[in-house]
Image (cartoon, rainbow, N blue to C red; front, side, top):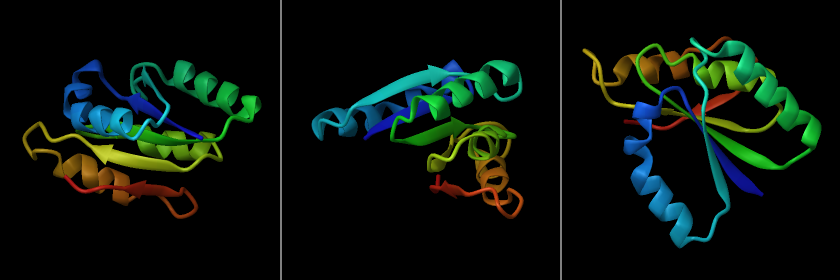
Length: 115
């Protein structure tokens, strides 16, 4: 199994540097992709469909700030476990992202971590 990290913005990568260090120290295989749910929705959906068809086993970390639609879209489009990671920033310092991840509709399984 591996970890797939999807960022809503390339700017979010810096926030995840400690996670990269941890994954490398633990010898966990991971890959990264920058695909915005707002700016590149068709590309994101195609990526997730291809992932589903591959049968690959993974957990997805959906890293996003502000409106943070990414985790919800990922959870709807794949059967793989999705964990939303809110990025601090903007006027609410990431609280808006955390709330967006926690308030997805019923039946959309998104786990989320705190700020």
